[in-house]
Image (cartoon, rainbow, N blue to C red; front, side):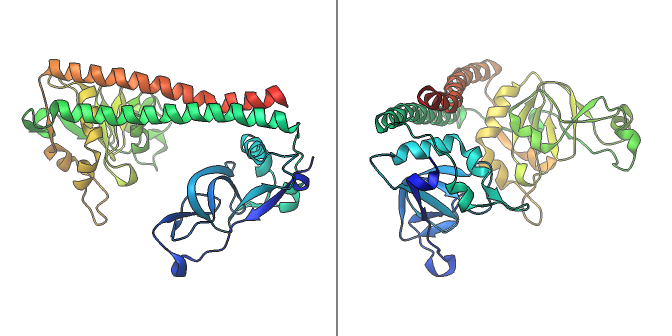
Length: 352
């Protein structure tokens, strides 16, 4: 049946931040939270974007919130024919069909007539209830796994700090290891980028954690005639500029970088994995060391002066081993979480 024949649209309400901003309930439209208000008009429901649509145009918002006029929700016209939870799940799992109802080039806005004309499979109400029940079981499983993974992440940081903070003497990174930064060959010299064979990393790639590949490359000549340099395997890379400042990764292959990255070169006094976790868990402290007009950049000098706790190498290995075991549990949970969407789709396929 057509969507408009079995459901009705409940539009959000216009709200003006200047006169109605509050502190309690988040205000949503078709995207993320925009500000807070002191009243709410929705609770625990799926929201459909009306304006500025993206392919992810339907989202579930948990708790009490205020929905503005950039979003809308649905109600059933006939409860004996349509369970609204079934409709919401169906649309959420088929939201590419909703996105195709968008009109516009620079910005897609939903065409209500096209939206209401969507054909929706309508099985008997008892089948709808089965679909909803099975999907809800999967969602509870997903929520449990996410909470467990988050608890393990918090546990890793607590474990690390408990094992080393204030138990060992501090040392400046510059006293522990050699550091260096990269460079960018002149863009105007095409020879520096012709037949490129040298991996060349930018700061956006540092956040990967373990870094196994590069998106960009430069030529041998570009490496030779610029301040770019090859960093050895197991160098710890730290992003220094802008939004990526403080992000840290371990280089797992030989590569060069641009000047926005500081490389901490490996030696026998520290494990790269230990340094990685240490800097990762001191992210906020690293950001406090930023300089510049907008205080958004780290410098190699500041990184050299940054102090860390360094236990004996064997204790570093023990700590890293404990963390890696917990991270493996997190990875297994995340693999299970990643399968949930396809399992939900399989529920629809089974009954429809």
